[in-house]
Amino acid sequence: MSILPPRDASDLETFEHPLAARYASKAMVRLLSPMYRMRVWRRLWVALAESEAELGLPVSAGQIRELRETQDAVDLEAIARYEASLRHDVMAAIHAWGEQAPGARPIIHLGATSCFVTDNGDLLICREALELLRHRLRDVISALGDFAAKWMDQPCLGFTHFQPAQPTTVGKRATLWIQDLLLDLEDLDHILRTTPVRGIKGTTGTQASFLELFDGDGAKVEALEARFCAKVGVKAIAVSGQTATRKLEDRLGQVLCGIAASASKFACDLRLLQHLKEVEEPFEQKQIGSSAMPYKRNPMRSERINSLARFVLGLMPSTYQTSATQWMERTLDDSAHRRLTVSQGLMAVDAILVLYRNVATGLVVYPRMIETRLQGELPFMAAEVLLMEAVKRGGDRQDLHERFRVAALEAGRRIKQEGRPNELLSLLARDPAWAMTEGELAALLDPVRFTGCAGDQVRRFLAGDVASALAGYRPGDEAAVRV
Image (cartoon, rainbow, N blue to C red):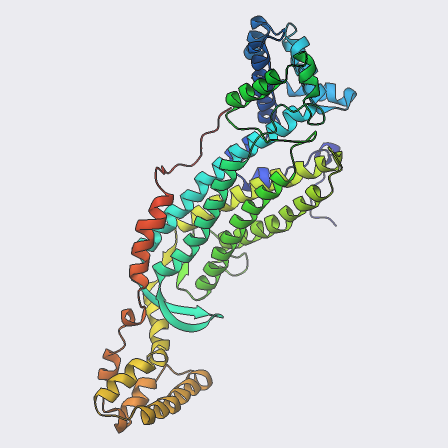
């Protein structure tokens, strides 16, 4: 017998995308919504009409006024009705707007091809989405910076190969997470600076239709594109076919994958640290970790970051297959794929960064647990310090080295086979060759002594690279969007 409740036919007619409904922020979902896309298209058509009118084409002030007055009154149902019969999304949008602005209907989309709105619109929306991600990225960098500053001098055991290694500090480890994000921020800023729009290029990129409109005056065609780009605030790509090169989305994918990889590295580290009971992600007062094991405090936020990152890292490389298989001036086999990859990639990374900030602002550190683990391993790592002190007291370095080796092996055996604490110092103190009591040996094991320049590195890093990246930063939940 099924445990699911009975369902009527209407339950089977819709699908709620988890990225939009469960993970991504409202701001990102709004940017990628059909309504927002239509409003961006209309903004592009208005900019085109204004530019054409300014250069003497038969577009009246009344028509432009009518377009502006109805610009935001998008009727998605009317567009859907037109698309059902016309089988063309751009023409459907034009006809629907023509109903609302009948006087301007004759000049909507004058001289343009569909990619005028689809490609220019997608590139503008991607830029706004990247601005939102940039804001979120700096949210995370700021939160981790605060964490690093608080714990910059807290010694902890380092790990290489997840085996005990030379000590570092909790704050220094956090700078490694920040460094990855700073590199992602550099890449994102580069994309924002250099990603163009398609501009006004015509059907196959030759601008032939606009040259006809201006009676063969090429200078006016150039002026038209310049005026249009000034209105939308972004330069146009130098040349295109019917579409802007799909390599622009490859570059977007690189940035999204980079952020996802950085976040996933942090989440993996935190899951290991939570297992060690040294650092934990936040845990709500009434949060349940397991339906069967009520004591559990699972790192569910970090696991979700890893899961979403895995999705992005698998999703975005397929954009290269699109750019690699474009035919001549264009082919339509890119359309469905682009709608899926770009929107889902942006929403998933948005969700990752929202989660990352949530975790980074609520990290819980357990200094006593950190110190206990460090003290358990530190005697092994202090060999050189102990040897030097014993030599100063008259010992033979080579003889002491061998004695240390034998004692360390015995201490390790007792830890692993008998479950005893680290007794290396007591074993050394019993050996007259060392000429030191256990207390004197222990006094040499100040953890800070073994962290090198870690604390100073954190200070310099926060005051330099991090401060520069956060210049002008203002914390907030959402970045402003234009439309």
